[in-house]
Image (cartoon, rainbow, N blue to C red):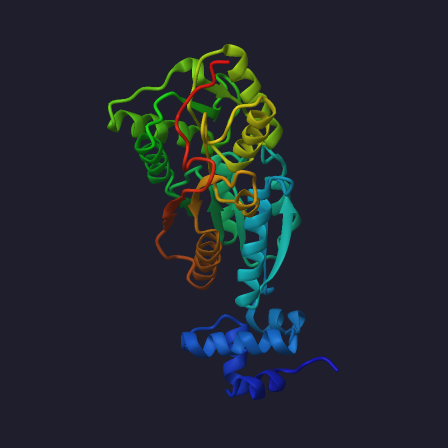
Length: 341
C-alpha cells in the first residue's frame, strides 16, 4: 500500500499538520524538524496527491529545470544536484534540454505553464524575454550571464582565475597557454567572456601578460576541442609550460593529446581546468581544477526559487558561490621544462 501522511508523521515523531507544512513548503517548521520529516518522506516513499495539493494551494508542487545540454558533464552534474535538492523540498522537477545556444528556452516556458517556477541556465533568450518570463512566474538564472531583474546563481570566476595564476606562478610557470577563449565575431557563452577577462586581470595583478600566440579560440568546450587546441599549439611551435583550460572538458582533452604527443604532464607542461567535474579526479594524471561547490550551487538555486515562490515581491538577489583550487597531479611536481628533442 502507498504510504500516507500519517505514516510519515509516525516515523518522524511529529503531527500530521507538521508533515503537511513541510511537504507544502510552508513556514513555521524548524530546520531540524523539517530535515526529520523529509527523511521520513524519503524512507516511506510518501508522495502527496498533486491534484489535491494544487486545488488547495494553487501550486503544482513542480518546478522546471532548463539546461542547454546533458552531454556536457557540467550541466548533467548540476541537473542531478538540483533535482536531488528539489526532492528535499518536496518538489518534482520537469527537465528541459534547451539546446547549446538556448534556442529552446522560450518554448520550454510556453509548454509548461503549470510549473510553480523555473531554474534556467540562460543562453539564448533576449533579456526582455527573460524579464517577461520572470513576470509570469518565479525564475532563477544560472551562470555568468547577468540580468538585473532576475535572481541568479553564479560562481566567483575572478577568484578562480586568480587562484590558478597564483598557483602556476608559484610553480615557476610563465609560458601560459589558454584554451577556450572567445572566437572574434562569433557567438560565445558568457563563461568564456567572463573567464578571459578574469584571466587578463589576474595576469595584470602580477605584472604579466598573455602571449597571443598561446591563446586558442573555441566556441565549443568539449574534450575533442581541448585535444584539437593542443594540436594547434604544438603546430605553432611556440614553447609553453602551462595550460589554463576554461573548463574541465577542454583540460581533459588537452591531457590526452599532450600524452599522445609525448609531452609529460606536469614535468613539461602543467594543466589546469575549471568546474571540478567528478571525472577530473580520475583522469591520468588527476586534474588540477577550480572547484565551486556544486552542491551549494544547487542548494542556493532551489532556495532562491522557493523564496521567490513564497514571496514574489522580494528584492532580486544574486548569489556568487565561492571557489577553491584543487591542486592535483596535473600541476604538482613538475620541473617546468619544455621538450627540446
